[in-house]
Length: 383
Image (cartoon, rainbow, N blue to C red):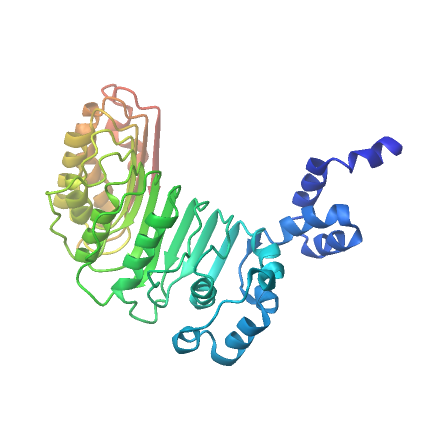
């Protein structure tokens, strides 16, 4: 019994016990109150992942709390406001420093506190952040800590977010979060035709996802902003209108994994302009809009010509299209266009096809062809 009690003096064991209770917040709360030794490990887990700002409101200094309750951090109320001394932020900081993952919802509260405390980060040890922007981030504030690795930026779909929101937020992230690895931009409805922000260089950015309701020109500008970063994984939703890609800059030259959501025609245009020469995994998902056999054929030819020597995994999803009326024959028409090209894939190991009709795919004669050099796995599904 004595040796078991001694084990609780080891901080790593206390932390592991608290971590096992991450989904049981009631027990963690009791644990934090039972004794001083358990308090810090339990509180670290309790406050590690936050989805609301409301728990922090009572921790604000009295004058800042009055500013929030009375004026909701309006620009007029914050202008000229004197930040309280650091001693009054002691309770707030004691819990803010424990937060590692923040789902912030609206950014207004966070931006208000960051404006008042412009000389420091509100959450200094944050690793992952999801923020919904409703206003432009002012130049002088520090919204993103240098510890940040994952950032998700979104805007409410029911308003037209100003283009300056995404420009300022990405510029702030490039300046203040040098170790950012994963970026996701989603749920935007822009009211402009392009972005004016110069290219940004995130030295450690590896993964980008763009699933935003934006025009083709804005998407092109956004890709230009991010292409100087060493991105190796990209997931992108293409707008329904075609885009003339600017050949004056290299479009994601380090890319290894690419997932495109869009029509075969738009996917082919994007792949044509990707600068990477060593793509290993490619996924094309068509869910709406036209998917003509001629467009699919051009897409397959472009994939083979660009990545026949590097591609290891290929996944194609073609949904039912309003321009394709004989869905029963579509699967064979698509395979007739793709399968003769298969020997050109020198290192392809996996092929996944989801087609409008796959009732007779299993007995397609070329599936067992010996001319497929390295293929190990073939999957067919019906959409």
